[in-house]
Amino acid sequence: MEVGGASLAASLMPSGLIDEYQLFLSPVVLGGGTPLFPSLDKRIQLRLAETRHFDSVVMLRYLAD
Image 1 (cartoon, rainbow, N blue to C red):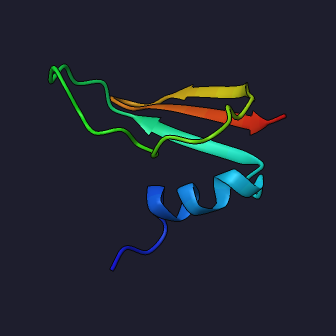
Image 2: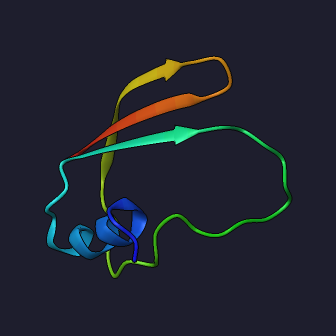
Image 3: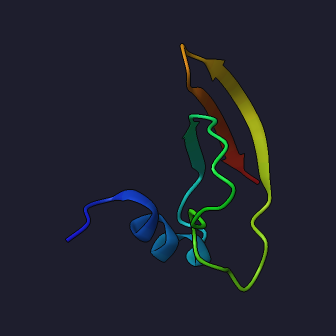
């Protein structure tokens, strides 16, 4: 059983219950991948609020409009 993460966020996204998203990216070239969230019926408008760089990770903080 998964606690939190993308599946929990995906269940809350269509209702507009998430006001902030924090994504931590570790850039690696793999050639393909799995989507972080499933497809949504409508686009969610996000505004980039902050970026931070760590040793090999970038944090992107978005606010929902």
